[in-house]
Image 1 (cartoon, helix red, strand yellow):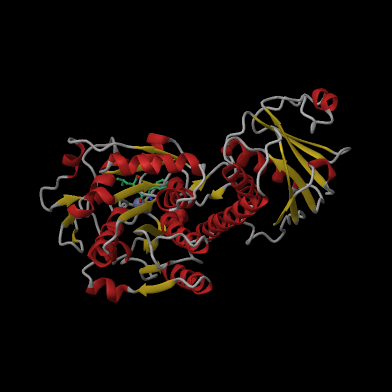
Image 2: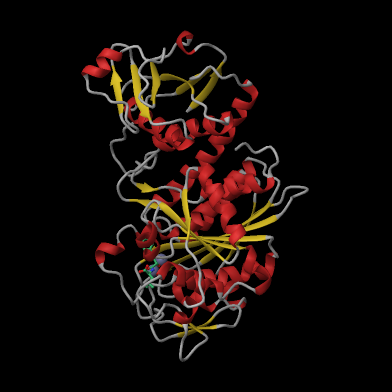
Length: 488
Ligand code: BES
Ligand code: ZN
Ligand code: ZN
């Protein structure tokens, strides 16, 4: 999509179609021309309600207020309606609450994320005819802004949305087309295009590094594991942040096989790995003043004569021994080794992991919300704050003194599952915590993205399929922490 910012009144701009928001049911605004028709059609102007009037070629969308996420969702609704028409160009005005940058970005993100379709495997594609969206600098309440600021906002939002859609494409790709080796190839191509450093490690390297837990998970698969390391090192970086992603290109559950209804969609178990690849892409394009490392730990969890088993005892890279009691709790095994590696080799200021780690997180928070876990309240709070600005939902899940005991093993240092059926998202995080060195305890954040990473029934600006969860949250956190001119 091409975006053009025009310093002209909304009504003076020529386009095939126009987009008008009904804000808080105010039908008396000057841009609402068909009050009577809308009334006749029973259009109430509720949030997420949208209608197209052919006479005036107008898409009306209700928004309950000017919060940025209302705008994002409204834009997604508008583009969905427009996609059914032959319109090539559309126009919209500005809707600003406090910060012009935030809401202009939301506008673009709503369009870009809402227009996304994964139709690579459809013989018949429904092409979007719309090519151009013209943004008038006229504002809903006549506020004034510099065009330069708006232009930059559009450019930045496009970068972030492109990264999210890139991640969605990766995650949506079926498992026999995207296995660890292919993910590594794709990461390499992306890195080359964006001048990001890329190092791919194969199973021999993992063996040499003593990453037995990672290797055990992938052993039964005909597809060999890969650890992908991307790095972006700007001059005068303000900090070094490492993102580690769970990259199960398929999670069958292994010998603790998943029931068939739970197995479908498990191509999405690579969402964390894909997200970290997207995060570094966006960070590089945005030229963020932060050294970033993305570690994607890619493996396939399968069954077979060579499969790892419940009762096996594995030795992780940090020499801790793990009693396997359930081979479906594989993500934590892969991440344990990848986290150890990242701490040992990279000496980070902050270390994040992103993972579709537990169904329990979805039970706890619902399918729209990322679970935020870690040892530092302050760091977790900063992530929650960033989430509120990003449009991604995130909520803390607290550690306590009792839960760690549930991971005790009678034969090894730790068990890969909890002895209780409750609190599974937190006990999974506490398992990872066993592989975080003391000096990194307060610098580590675990994001369980199992809920929002894969959308079963479309919501907000997410069509069904991969959502690209974690990318916008991470970028917003980096901007908030390390960019002085970031706009609230
Ligand atoms: N990849 C799954 C978690 C998951 C579940 C992601 C649903 C997305 C949607 C993970 O590897 C897993 O299977 N976890 C088990 C852990 C259990 C065996 C302790 C789970 O959540 O049931
Ligand atoms: Zn699993
Ligand atoms: Zn998994």
